[in-house]
Image (cartoon, rainbow, N blue to C red; front, side, top):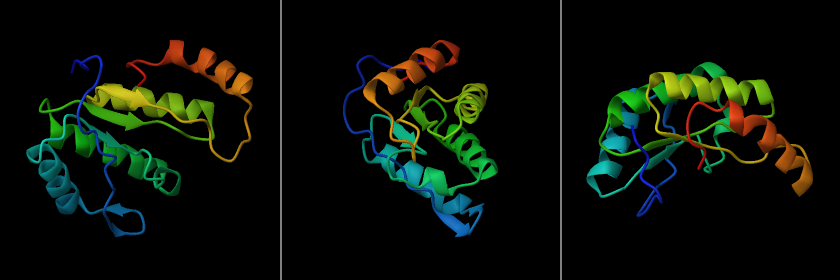
Length: 136
C-alpha cells in the first residue's frame, strides 16, 4: 500500500481491546477499526502512542498487526509502531508488518533508556536503512 506524502487529516492511535490479559478482542477491534475509517480517518496507527504496546506480548503485537492489516485492507494507510527496548525486536516487528501488508512504520526512542539526542540519532542511522517500509 502506498503512503501518501505528506500524510494528512486525522490519524488516530488505535486502542487494542483485550478479551483477557493476552487475548485480542477481535470483534471489538474490527468494529473499532471500521468505525474509525467510516468516521473519516485518513490513516490508522496501531501499537503506538497510547502507551500500551510495551504491555503486550510479542505474539499479541503480531496478532494486532495481522488483524489490522486484514480489516483495514487498502481502505486507508496503516501505520504500525515498532518501538521496543530491543533493536532486533523492532526490526523483526517491522519485517513482520511489511510481510502482512502494513503501509508504514512509526518509531519512538527505546523506552526505559535515557538516550541523548546523539545516541538516538545513532540508533536511527543504524535501524532505518534496514527497515522494509517507510518510517513516519
